[in-house]
Length: 161
Image 1 (tube, rainbow, N blue to C red):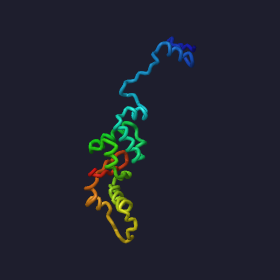
Image 2 (image 1 turned 45 degrees about the horizontal axis):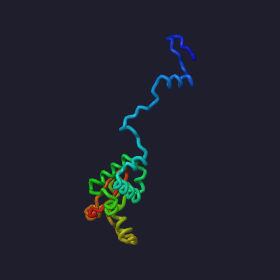
Image 3 (image 1 turned 180 degrees about the vertical axis):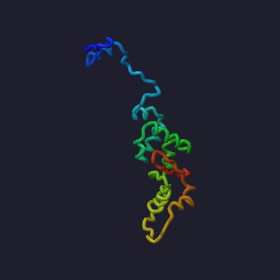
Image 4 (image 1 turned 30 degrees about the horizontal axis):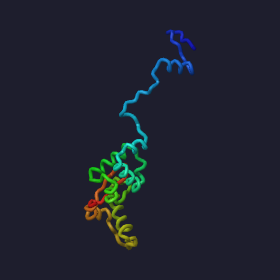
């Protein structure tokens, strides 16, 4: 022990300090229930079976979903529920694709171009043809789909599922 001359306090260090603290202070951590951070596995295990199936389907169709924590996953699933997508089957029927979010809404044009060139099998459009993909979204395609913007992604869903 090292004595501090001015005020009769003793400076404890190392093992001596640890023993003093252990003897005089409760070593149980003080944790409130709502502040406990559960692991991803705990969060998943506490879901209802229907929600686990929905989570699995979302993760299967949207790989970027697996990077989210439990709180964000629940938030996204709640958003889906507002559109009537509360089961894996409904998600599978409604989900079309996703794109990275673009602040200028160019993701709508990318979506329409994807439908025309990849889904409708029109990959060999003439180079001289100029198509305003974004205008096509607003004129035609927006009636058949709705979008959810979440965590840097835009998810496209069929309106009629």
